[in-house]
Image 1 (cartoon, rainbow over the protein chains, first blue to last red):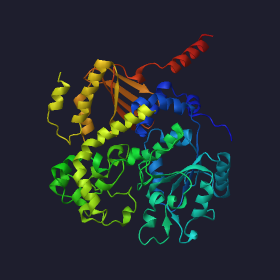
Image 2: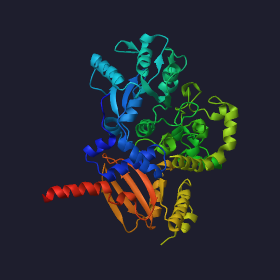
Image 3: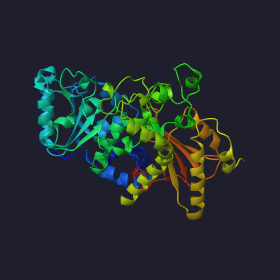
Image 4: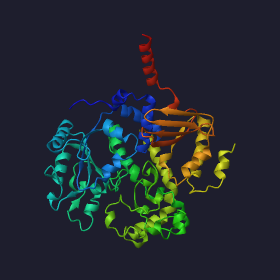
Length: 351
Length: 130
């Protein structure tokens, strides 16, 4: 395997000062949802980390996930891609094409056997492999071949994580998720349509920094970002507790910024970090723009009834779970921040 | 000067997300005075409604000292009107905000000259004197 420079060496060669490096580490801690007290350890780990090879495969997708990442203002995302990881194959971004591109993929797999990361966006059609091919290779064959020597796989977006829109009823291509195919490697799901760029960056950064993958929930999603519902962290939550709801998109409640629950908001049963991480350089998130959460990071969100039907109609989730969520609402909201702090303290102590 | 306790007890025109942070700041100041231990609050991890972050910044005000750091983009480090409470804002090379923090400490670490930079500077000075 060729010897790659450490991230510390790369930054030093670029003339980045120690203060600049500390700033980089502070934002990295923030990305990883770690307490600032972890910054010295992050600094040490990043300084000695070597660039992991990353192969990005795009299957049945709309390129929205790649757009989300490359348009993001996440800390040094451009640096992360071009400096801190070695992006050896991404057929949307790379200059090479055809045989040259496939040769780059095979070279990266051979040189980094057992240690590279595979990122996948898009679902995999099984009804007829000819529905989606790259260089004449079916998506399922390319996935199996590429994953064979990988350390882990990251499913970027709801299509790769859960089948997404291609998998929506009647699922004409027989679309399945990555974890339906890959069963012998760690798979991290980063769902969303598209996913939050910072979350994608965080998974790569953790792998780069500590050589580990994040703790996952039952759907394979990183707990640091998918551990709480949108509702738990929503700034409109106080209106929900007060029973103040917008009834239509142009009534006085909507203008006053009241809770969008009755307009179909799926925030109470959607696990994601939009309410705190936000979008467009932290400008806002859909609820802040006056639109209900669609629940795009939940499995099969496309087939769970109308986006503007209130959860109480019972189409999106079971009534029992909703009743439980409603009863636990106040306590959850109050406990959310405290639980987050406890988790951070625990990590810091273990670290 | 308005006391933090006084502000904390005042009515907030927004969604109620500023008051708990001020409370946390007060506890952090107590900890700093009692034990010398610093606290950093990552504002990106907290929910804010429209205008609330600006409200928090205005509430804490501006103190005697501010600094600008040029490293991987601009950072502004400013002591608020409450000594020991610092507002840090990091921007990337495209001038986009990548992190906002409240540090409750005597001097934010990033303001101090770092050993690695001091050593590199000394080497450059050596070169110049030859």
